[in-house]
Amino acid sequence: MPALGHVYWRGFLRLQLVSINVDIYAATESAAEIQFNQIHKTSGKRIKYEKVVPGIGKVQNADIVKGYEIEPDVYVTLEPDEIEAIRLESKKTIDMVQFVDAAEIDPRYFERPYYIVPRDEVAAEGYLVIREALKKAGKVGLAQITIHGREHLTVIAPIEKNALLLNVIRYENELRKADKYFAELEEAKFNRELVSLAAELISRNSAPFNP
Image 1 (tube, rainbow, N blue to C red):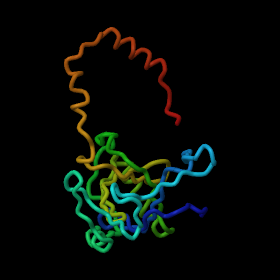
Image 2: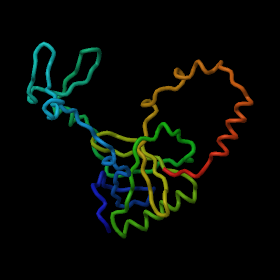
Image 3: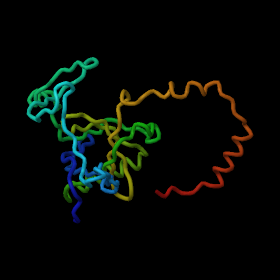
Image 4: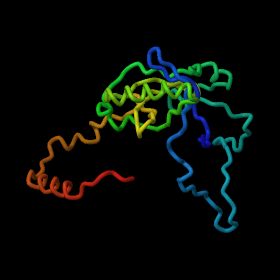
């Protein structure tokens, strides 16, 4: 098998009594993004940033702790061991507990895609059974995964000829309500004839998706 890169998560994918060893890999390539640095025009050297406190000046890393803002400029500070104590224990199982039509999930919920890969030949059979069952039912599986002390909601879907994709999705409270952005459009008028013209233009310029 060719090198697949860094394993993002390792554990078990489970559907009731079927449990298989899997590895999860990032499905996106961040290296394709162009990164720029800020450079001092005269010297050509990279700009560095110092950690400072207003009214105090530069501070050392040893004097910095993490804090959560409970009201403007008021923070509860936490030591590393306190943060570790409140992190969720990393469960090593992805349990698919509910199944829905993919079209039911609003695109705004999708956040990050990952490939689910069976770890060995023994896992491959169960993997393909789950994949084919999802495809036959026309459903995607909902599950939760715990990574780095945080619980994420995920959608597991069949893709390609023999693959499973895991999408980390947002919880409802992470989305801003759309109503306030479009409230003024409720009373807006538009020309129905122009809708027909626009629909005709869309039809003429429709083609298969090719990213």
